[in-house]
Image (tube, helix red, strand yellow):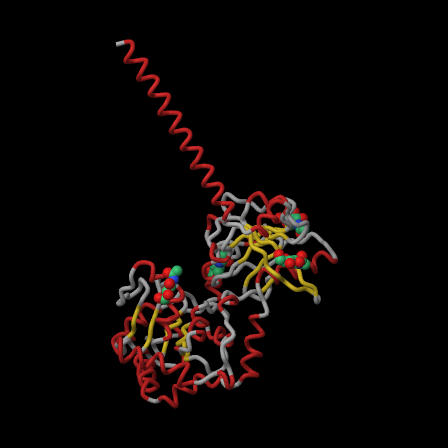
Length: 390
Ligand SMILES: *[C@@H]1O[C@H](CO)[C@@H](O)[C@H](O)[C@H]1NC(C)=O
Ligand SMILES: *[C@@H]1O[C@H](CO)[C@@H](O)[C@H](O)[C@H]1NC(C)=O
Ligand SMILES: *[C@@H]1O[C@H](CO)[C@@H](O)[C@H](O)[C@H]1NC(C)=O
Ligand SMILES: *[C@@H]1O[C@H](CO)[C@@H](O)[C@H](O)[C@H]1NC(C)=O
Protein backbone atom coordinates (compact mmCIF):
# COMPACT_ATOMS: atom_id res chain seq x y z
CA UNK A 1 0.00 0.00 0.00
CA UNK A 2 2.70 2.46 1.03
CA UNK A 3 4.82 1.40 -1.92
CA UNK A 4 1.93 2.08 -4.30
CA UNK A 5 1.33 5.55 -2.97
CA UNK A 6 4.98 6.53 -3.27
CA UNK A 7 5.06 5.20 -6.82
CA UNK A 8 1.98 7.25 -7.67
CA UNK A 9 3.59 10.28 -6.17
CA UNK A 10 6.71 9.64 -8.19
CA UNK A 11 4.61 9.22 -11.32
CA UNK A 12 2.87 12.42 -10.53
CA UNK A 13 6.14 14.35 -10.46
CA UNK A 14 7.32 12.76 -13.66
CA UNK A 15 4.08 13.72 -15.41
CA UNK A 16 4.22 17.22 -13.94
CA UNK A 17 7.80 17.68 -15.16
CA UNK A 18 6.90 16.53 -18.65
CA UNK A 19 3.88 18.83 -18.75
CA UNK A 20 5.94 21.80 -17.56
CA UNK A 21 8.68 21.06 -20.08
CA UNK A 22 6.12 20.88 -22.89
CA UNK A 23 4.56 24.10 -21.70
CA UNK A 24 7.90 25.93 -21.82
CA UNK A 25 8.67 24.49 -25.23
CA UNK A 26 5.35 25.76 -26.55
CA UNK A 27 5.98 29.20 -25.02
CA UNK A 28 9.43 29.31 -26.57
CA UNK A 29 8.04 28.26 -29.93
CA UNK A 30 5.29 30.88 -29.83
CA UNK A 31 7.77 33.61 -28.96
CA UNK A 32 10.25 32.50 -31.59
CA UNK A 33 7.57 32.38 -34.26
CA UNK A 34 6.46 35.86 -33.25
CA UNK A 35 10.00 37.09 -33.88
CA UNK A 36 10.02 35.09 -37.10
CA UNK A 37 7.33 37.32 -38.59
CA UNK A 38 9.74 40.26 -38.51
CA UNK A 39 12.33 40.54 -41.23
CA UNK A 40 15.96 41.22 -40.16
CA UNK A 41 15.53 44.90 -41.06
CA UNK A 42 12.44 45.17 -38.82
CA UNK A 43 14.11 43.26 -36.01
CA UNK A 44 16.95 45.76 -36.15
CA UNK A 45 14.42 48.57 -35.71
CA UNK A 46 13.03 46.82 -32.65
CA UNK A 47 16.46 46.25 -31.12
CA UNK A 48 17.65 49.77 -31.83
CA UNK A 49 14.70 52.08 -32.36
CA UNK A 50 15.37 55.05 -34.64
CA UNK A 51 15.55 58.36 -32.80
CA UNK A 52 12.90 60.01 -34.87
CA UNK A 53 9.69 59.48 -36.71
CA UNK A 54 7.96 56.64 -35.00
CA UNK A 55 4.20 56.47 -35.11
CA UNK A 56 2.65 54.15 -32.57
CA UNK A 57 -0.87 52.94 -33.15
CA UNK A 58 -2.87 52.79 -29.97
CA UNK A 59 -6.35 51.84 -28.94
CA UNK A 60 -8.52 49.05 -30.21
CA UNK A 61 -6.88 48.55 -33.49
CA UNK A 62 -9.32 47.46 -36.14
CA UNK A 63 -7.32 48.46 -39.16
CA UNK A 64 -5.05 45.47 -38.87
CA UNK A 65 -4.86 45.25 -42.64
CA UNK A 66 -2.98 48.55 -42.63
CA UNK A 67 -0.10 46.83 -40.84
CA UNK A 68 0.87 43.42 -42.16
CA UNK A 69 3.55 43.10 -39.45
CA UNK A 70 3.74 44.76 -36.00
CA UNK A 71 6.46 47.02 -37.35
CA UNK A 72 6.33 48.57 -40.75
CA UNK A 73 8.68 50.98 -42.48
CA UNK A 74 7.22 53.51 -44.82
CA UNK A 75 9.37 55.51 -47.20
CA UNK A 76 8.29 59.14 -47.27
CA UNK A 77 9.87 62.08 -48.99
CA UNK A 78 9.97 65.56 -47.55
CA UNK A 79 11.59 68.52 -49.29
CA UNK A 80 13.43 66.27 -51.71
CA UNK A 81 14.86 63.95 -49.05
CA UNK A 82 13.86 60.37 -48.33
CA UNK A 83 12.96 59.24 -44.83
CA UNK A 84 12.12 55.90 -43.26
CA UNK A 85 9.09 56.28 -41.05
CA UNK A 86 8.38 53.53 -38.55
CA UNK A 87 4.78 52.60 -37.89
CA UNK A 88 4.14 50.09 -35.17
CA UNK A 89 1.71 48.39 -32.84
CA UNK A 90 4.57 46.91 -30.80
CA UNK A 91 4.19 48.17 -27.21
CA UNK A 92 7.93 47.98 -26.59
CA UNK A 93 8.39 50.77 -29.10
CA UNK A 94 5.85 53.07 -27.51
CA UNK A 95 8.43 54.81 -25.30
CA UNK A 96 10.45 55.72 -28.41
CA UNK A 97 7.49 56.90 -30.44
CA UNK A 98 6.97 60.59 -31.20
CA UNK A 99 3.34 60.24 -32.08
CA UNK A 100 0.49 58.02 -31.03
CA UNK A 101 -2.36 57.45 -33.42
CA UNK A 102 -5.86 56.33 -32.49
CA UNK A 103 -8.51 55.30 -34.97
CA UNK A 104 -11.99 56.63 -34.41
CA UNK A 105 -13.51 53.19 -34.94
CA UNK A 106 -15.66 52.52 -31.94
CA UNK A 107 -16.40 53.74 -28.43
CA UNK A 108 -13.98 51.17 -26.96
CA UNK A 109 -11.01 52.87 -28.54
CA UNK A 110 -11.39 55.87 -26.26
CA UNK A 111 -12.82 54.45 -23.15
CA UNK A 112 -10.05 52.85 -21.12
CA UNK A 113 -7.17 54.27 -23.18
CA UNK A 114 -6.37 57.92 -22.51
CA UNK A 115 -3.98 59.78 -24.79
CA UNK A 116 -0.36 59.01 -23.89
CA UNK A 117 1.41 61.68 -21.93
CA UNK A 118 4.30 63.61 -23.53
CA UNK A 119 3.56 62.35 -27.00
CA UNK A 120 1.69 63.95 -29.83
CA UNK A 121 -1.67 62.22 -29.74
CA UNK A 122 -3.67 62.02 -32.93
CA UNK A 123 -7.11 60.73 -33.72
CA UNK A 124 -8.02 59.56 -37.19
CA UNK A 125 -11.50 59.18 -38.60
CA UNK A 126 -11.10 57.39 -41.91
CA UNK A 127 -14.74 56.36 -42.18
CA UNK A 128 -17.82 58.49 -42.78
CA UNK A 129 -18.50 61.14 -40.15
CA UNK A 130 -21.84 59.38 -39.70
CA UNK A 131 -19.93 56.70 -37.80
CA UNK A 132 -17.72 58.88 -35.65
CA UNK A 133 -17.41 58.21 -31.95
CA UNK A 134 -14.75 60.68 -30.92
CA UNK A 135 -14.95 63.53 -33.40
CA UNK A 136 -18.65 63.94 -32.76
CA UNK A 137 -17.95 65.05 -29.20
CA UNK A 138 -16.05 68.14 -28.22
CA UNK A 139 -14.75 66.49 -25.07
CA UNK A 140 -13.18 63.60 -26.91
CA UNK A 141 -11.94 65.56 -29.94
CA UNK A 142 -10.21 68.11 -27.76
CA UNK A 143 -8.20 65.49 -25.91
CA UNK A 144 -6.08 65.11 -29.01
CA UNK A 145 -3.35 67.30 -30.41
CA UNK A 146 -4.04 66.65 -34.06
CA UNK A 147 -7.06 65.34 -35.90
CA UNK A 148 -6.95 63.43 -39.16
CA UNK A 149 -10.13 63.21 -41.19
CA UNK A 150 -11.98 64.23 -44.29
CA UNK A 151 -13.52 67.57 -43.24
CA UNK A 152 -11.64 70.74 -43.97
CA UNK A 153 -10.92 71.90 -40.44
CA UNK A 154 -8.96 68.78 -39.51
CA UNK A 155 -5.20 69.19 -39.10
CA UNK A 156 -4.38 66.51 -41.62
CA UNK A 157 -6.89 65.73 -44.35
CA UNK A 158 -7.30 62.26 -45.74
CA UNK A 159 -9.51 60.27 -47.99
CA UNK A 160 -10.57 56.82 -46.95
CA UNK A 161 -9.82 55.23 -50.29
CA UNK A 162 -6.40 56.70 -50.93
CA UNK A 163 -4.72 53.34 -50.79
CA UNK A 164 -7.23 51.64 -53.10
CA UNK A 165 -6.04 53.46 -56.20
CA UNK A 166 -4.04 51.81 -58.93
CA UNK A 167 -2.55 53.40 -61.99
CA UNK A 168 -4.54 51.79 -64.80
CA UNK A 169 -3.55 51.46 -68.46
CA UNK A 170 -4.61 54.67 -70.23
CA UNK A 171 -4.36 56.29 -73.64
CA UNK A 172 -3.16 53.85 -76.28
CA UNK A 173 -2.52 51.15 -73.68
CA UNK A 174 -6.24 50.95 -73.03
CA UNK A 175 -8.53 49.04 -75.33
CA UNK A 176 -12.23 48.99 -74.56
CA UNK A 177 -13.00 45.74 -76.34
CA UNK A 178 -10.05 43.82 -74.92
CA UNK A 179 -9.88 45.31 -71.41
CA UNK A 180 -13.56 45.80 -70.64
CA UNK A 181 -15.77 43.71 -72.87
CA UNK A 182 -13.97 40.39 -73.34
CA UNK A 183 -14.25 39.28 -69.71
CA UNK A 184 -17.89 40.33 -69.58
CA UNK A 185 -18.95 38.59 -72.78
CA UNK A 186 -17.23 35.39 -71.69
CA UNK A 187 -18.81 35.47 -68.19
CA UNK A 188 -22.26 36.13 -69.64
CA UNK A 189 -21.92 33.18 -72.02
CA UNK A 190 -20.33 30.70 -69.63
CA UNK A 191 -21.73 31.62 -66.24
CA UNK A 192 -24.88 33.55 -67.07
CA UNK A 193 -23.90 36.32 -64.67
CA UNK A 194 -26.25 39.19 -63.84
CA UNK A 195 -26.08 42.73 -65.19
CA UNK A 196 -24.47 44.04 -62.00
CA UNK A 197 -22.88 42.90 -58.77
CA UNK A 198 -23.14 44.12 -55.20
CA UNK A 199 -21.07 43.33 -52.10
CA UNK A 200 -22.60 44.74 -48.93
CA UNK A 201 -22.68 43.17 -45.52
CA UNK A 202 -23.63 46.11 -43.32
CA UNK A 203 -27.40 46.02 -43.67
CA UNK A 204 -28.48 48.88 -41.37
CA UNK A 205 -30.96 51.30 -42.92
CA UNK A 206 -30.41 54.28 -40.64
CA UNK A 207 -28.10 56.46 -42.75
CA UNK A 208 -28.84 55.01 -46.16
CA UNK A 209 -31.82 53.61 -48.01
CA UNK A 210 -29.59 51.34 -50.07
CA UNK A 211 -31.19 48.10 -48.91
CA UNK A 212 -34.72 49.13 -49.83
CA UNK A 213 -33.50 50.68 -53.05
CA UNK A 214 -31.72 47.46 -53.99
CA UNK A 215 -34.77 45.36 -53.15
CA UNK A 216 -36.66 47.38 -55.68
CA UNK A 217 -33.90 47.30 -58.34
CA UNK A 218 -33.76 43.52 -58.07
CA UNK A 219 -37.34 43.36 -59.31
CA UNK A 220 -36.26 44.83 -62.63
CA UNK A 221 -32.73 43.56 -63.27
CA UNK A 222 -30.54 40.60 -62.32
CA UNK A 223 -28.17 41.66 -59.57
CA UNK A 224 -25.66 39.19 -58.14
CA UNK A 225 -25.43 39.98 -54.44
CA UNK A 226 -22.39 38.52 -52.67
CA UNK A 227 -22.64 40.25 -49.30
CA UNK A 228 -24.84 39.44 -46.33
CA UNK A 229 -27.51 41.92 -47.43
CA UNK A 230 -30.04 40.46 -49.88
CA UNK A 231 -27.52 37.74 -50.64
CA UNK A 232 -28.29 35.54 -53.62
CA UNK A 233 -24.83 34.15 -54.49
CA UNK A 234 -23.14 31.50 -52.45
CA UNK A 235 -19.38 31.97 -52.19
CA UNK A 236 -17.45 29.19 -50.54
CA UNK A 237 -15.65 29.77 -47.28
CA UNK A 238 -12.35 31.52 -47.81
CA UNK A 239 -13.28 32.85 -51.20
CA UNK A 240 -15.77 35.16 -49.58
CA UNK A 241 -13.23 37.71 -48.45
CA UNK A 242 -10.44 37.14 -50.91
CA UNK A 243 -9.98 40.48 -52.64
CA UNK A 244 -8.38 39.03 -55.75
CA UNK A 245 -11.42 36.86 -56.21
CA UNK A 246 -13.68 39.81 -55.47
CA UNK A 247 -12.09 41.92 -58.22
CA UNK A 248 -12.37 39.04 -60.68
CA UNK A 249 -16.07 38.69 -59.87
CA UNK A 250 -16.74 42.44 -60.14
CA UNK A 251 -15.03 42.53 -63.56
CA UNK A 252 -17.50 40.02 -65.01
CA UNK A 253 -20.46 42.42 -64.98
CA UNK A 254 -20.98 45.76 -66.63
CA UNK A 255 -22.05 47.56 -63.46
CA UNK A 256 -21.32 47.55 -59.77
CA UNK A 257 -23.47 49.14 -57.11
CA UNK A 258 -21.32 51.36 -54.98
CA UNK A 259 -23.94 52.31 -52.40
CA UNK A 260 -22.67 54.03 -49.26
CA UNK A 261 -23.87 53.48 -45.70
CA UNK A 262 -24.34 57.21 -45.15
CA UNK A 263 -24.69 60.36 -47.22
CA UNK A 264 -22.08 62.66 -45.71
CA UNK A 265 -20.00 65.32 -47.48
CA UNK A 266 -17.28 63.88 -49.69
CA UNK A 267 -17.69 60.44 -48.23
CA UNK A 268 -16.94 57.76 -50.79
CA UNK A 269 -15.60 54.38 -49.76
CA UNK A 270 -13.10 52.23 -51.60
CA UNK A 271 -15.92 50.44 -53.46
CA UNK A 272 -16.05 52.95 -56.30
CA UNK A 273 -12.30 52.72 -56.85
CA UNK A 274 -12.32 48.95 -56.81
CA UNK A 275 -14.80 49.23 -59.62
CA UNK A 276 -12.63 51.49 -61.74
CA UNK A 277 -9.74 49.09 -61.08
CA UNK A 278 -11.90 46.25 -62.39
CA UNK A 279 -13.00 48.05 -65.59
CA UNK A 280 -16.60 48.29 -64.46
CA UNK A 281 -18.94 51.30 -64.29
CA UNK A 282 -19.82 52.20 -60.69
CA UNK A 283 -23.40 53.18 -59.90
CA UNK A 284 -22.93 55.63 -57.04
CA UNK A 285 -25.24 56.28 -54.11
CA UNK A 286 -23.54 58.87 -51.93
CA UNK A 287 -23.63 62.54 -50.94
CA UNK A 288 -23.63 64.61 -54.18
CA UNK A 289 -20.26 66.16 -53.24
CA UNK A 290 -18.64 62.71 -53.27
CA UNK A 291 -18.92 62.28 -57.04
CA UNK A 292 -16.29 64.94 -57.66
CA UNK A 293 -13.74 62.48 -56.29
CA UNK A 294 -14.16 60.32 -59.39
CA UNK A 295 -12.98 61.00 -62.94
CA UNK A 296 -15.56 62.97 -64.94
CA UNK A 297 -17.90 60.70 -66.87
CA UNK A 298 -16.73 57.48 -65.21
CA UNK A 299 -19.81 56.76 -63.10
CA UNK A 300 -23.61 56.77 -62.94
CA UNK A 301 -25.22 58.69 -60.04
CA UNK A 302 -28.40 57.30 -58.53
CA UNK A 303 -29.59 60.82 -57.64
CA UNK A 304 -29.93 61.62 -61.36
CA UNK A 305 -32.87 59.22 -61.69
CA UNK A 306 -36.39 59.76 -60.47
CA UNK A 307 -36.94 56.13 -59.47
CA UNK A 308 -35.24 52.74 -59.22
CA UNK A 309 -37.27 51.66 -62.26
CA UNK A 310 -35.87 54.53 -64.32
CA UNK A 311 -32.33 53.63 -63.25
CA UNK A 312 -32.88 49.95 -64.06
CA UNK A 313 -34.24 50.87 -67.52
CA UNK A 314 -31.17 53.00 -68.16
CA UNK A 315 -28.78 50.18 -67.19
CA UNK A 316 -30.63 47.80 -69.52
CA UNK A 317 -30.41 50.41 -72.27
CA UNK A 318 -26.63 50.69 -71.79
CA UNK A 319 -26.35 46.92 -71.76
CA UNK A 320 -27.85 46.84 -75.23
CA UNK A 321 -25.83 49.78 -76.58
CA UNK A 322 -22.10 49.17 -76.45
CA UNK A 323 -21.32 52.58 -77.92
CA UNK A 324 -23.20 54.31 -75.10
CA UNK A 325 -21.65 52.05 -72.46
CA UNK A 326 -18.20 52.71 -73.92
CA UNK A 327 -18.60 56.44 -73.23
CA UNK A 328 -18.15 55.70 -69.52
CA UNK A 329 -14.58 54.69 -70.30
CA UNK A 330 -13.71 57.78 -72.33
CA UNK A 331 -11.75 59.05 -69.34
CA UNK A 332 -9.25 56.23 -69.89
CA UNK A 333 -8.41 57.57 -73.33
CA UNK A 334 -7.66 61.01 -71.95
CA UNK A 335 -4.22 60.21 -70.54
CA UNK A 336 -3.35 63.72 -69.39
CA UNK A 337 -6.57 64.26 -67.46
CA UNK A 338 -6.43 60.81 -65.92
CA UNK A 339 -2.89 61.27 -64.67
CA UNK A 340 -3.82 64.65 -63.27
CA UNK A 341 -6.75 63.09 -61.45
CA UNK A 342 -4.79 60.22 -59.97
CA UNK A 343 -2.01 62.58 -58.91
CA UNK A 344 -4.36 64.47 -56.63
CA UNK A 345 -4.82 61.29 -54.59
CA UNK A 346 -2.15 58.71 -55.13
CA UNK A 347 0.77 60.96 -54.21
CA UNK A 348 -0.56 61.01 -50.73
CA UNK A 349 -0.34 58.43 -48.07
CA UNK A 350 -1.71 59.07 -44.64
CA UNK A 351 1.46 58.11 -42.78
CA UNK A 352 3.58 60.32 -45.01
CA UNK A 353 1.11 63.17 -44.55
CA UNK A 354 1.48 62.73 -40.80
CA UNK A 355 5.24 62.69 -41.21
CA UNK A 356 5.17 65.93 -43.21
CA UNK A 357 2.94 67.57 -40.62
CA UNK A 358 5.38 66.47 -37.93
CA UNK A 359 8.38 67.91 -39.80
CA UNK A 360 6.59 71.22 -40.14
CA UNK A 361 5.64 71.20 -36.48
CA UNK A 362 9.28 70.55 -35.54
CA UNK A 363 10.34 73.79 -37.24
CA UNK A 364 8.33 75.76 -34.71
CA UNK A 365 7.28 73.31 -31.99
CA UNK A 366 4.30 74.54 -30.04
CA UNK A 367 1.73 73.04 -27.78
CA UNK A 368 -1.48 72.62 -29.62
CA UNK A 369 -4.75 70.91 -28.92
CA UNK A 370 -7.16 70.30 -31.73
CA UNK A 371 -9.90 72.87 -32.00
CA UNK A 372 -11.92 70.99 -34.56
CA UNK A 373 -15.67 71.58 -34.45
CA UNK A 374 -17.44 68.37 -33.44
CA UNK A 375 -19.33 66.82 -36.32
CA UNK A 376 -23.08 66.71 -36.04
CA UNK A 377 -24.32 64.10 -38.47
CA UNK A 378 -27.89 65.31 -38.38
CA UNK A 379 -26.68 68.61 -39.81
CA UNK A 380 -23.88 67.43 -42.10
CA UNK A 381 -25.29 64.25 -43.59
CA UNK A 382 -28.27 64.22 -45.94
CA UNK A 383 -31.49 62.29 -45.62
CA UNK A 384 -31.18 59.43 -48.13
CA UNK A 385 -34.94 59.30 -48.74
CA UNK A 386 -34.88 62.86 -49.94
CA UNK A 387 -31.95 62.17 -52.28
CA UNK A 388 -32.84 58.81 -53.77
CA UNK A 389 -36.45 58.10 -54.63
CA UNK A 390 -37.22 54.42 -54.74
C1 LIG B 1 15.77 53.35 -45.28
O1 LIG B 1 15.78 51.93 -45.24
C2 LIG B 1 16.44 51.33 -46.35
C3 LIG B 1 16.24 49.83 -46.30
O2 LIG B 1 16.06 49.35 -45.01
C4 LIG B 1 17.92 51.75 -46.32
O3 LIG B 1 18.60 51.17 -47.40
C5 LIG B 1 18.01 53.26 -46.39
O4 LIG B 1 19.34 53.68 -46.26
C6 LIG B 1 17.17 53.91 -45.31
N1 LIG B 1 17.11 55.35 -45.56
C7 LIG B 1 17.28 56.25 -44.62
C8 LIG B 1 17.17 57.67 -45.06
O5 LIG B 1 17.50 55.95 -43.46
C1 LIG C 1 -7.74 34.24 -53.96
O1 LIG C 1 -8.51 33.93 -55.11
C2 LIG C 1 -7.71 33.75 -56.28
C3 LIG C 1 -8.66 33.60 -57.47
O2 LIG C 1 -9.67 32.68 -57.24
C4 LIG C 1 -6.80 32.55 -56.09
O3 LIG C 1 -6.00 32.37 -57.25
C5 LIG C 1 -5.92 32.79 -54.88
O4 LIG C 1 -5.14 31.63 -54.62
C6 LIG C 1 -6.75 33.11 -53.65
N1 LIG C 1 -5.87 33.55 -52.58
C7 LIG C 1 -5.97 33.08 -51.34
C8 LIG C 1 -5.00 33.65 -50.36
O5 LIG C 1 -6.81 32.27 -51.02
C1 LIG D 1 -0.93 67.65 -26.60
O1 LIG D 1 -2.16 67.74 -25.91
C2 LIG D 1 -2.06 67.71 -24.50
C3 LIG D 1 -3.47 67.74 -23.94
O2 LIG D 1 -4.19 66.60 -24.31
C4 LIG D 1 -1.25 68.89 -24.04
O3 LIG D 1 -1.10 68.85 -22.65
C5 LIG D 1 0.12 68.87 -24.71
O4 LIG D 1 0.85 70.03 -24.36
C6 LIG D 1 -0.01 68.80 -26.21
N1 LIG D 1 1.30 68.58 -26.81
C7 LIG D 1 1.69 69.15 -27.93
C8 LIG D 1 3.08 68.84 -28.37
O5 LIG D 1 0.99 69.87 -28.59
C1 LIG E 1 -27.10 68.14 -33.83
O1 LIG E 1 -28.07 68.87 -34.55
C2 LIG E 1 -29.40 68.57 -34.19
C3 LIG E 1 -30.32 69.26 -35.20
O2 LIG E 1 -29.99 70.61 -35.35
C4 LIG E 1 -29.64 68.99 -32.74
O3 LIG E 1 -30.95 68.68 -32.35
C5 LIG E 1 -28.65 68.24 -31.87
O4 LIG E 1 -28.75 68.67 -30.53
C6 LIG E 1 -27.22 68.45 -32.34
N1 LIG E 1 -26.33 67.57 -31.58
C7 LIG E 1 -25.25 68.01 -30.97
C8 LIG E 1 -24.43 66.98 -30.23
O5 LIG E 1 -24.88 69.16 -31.02
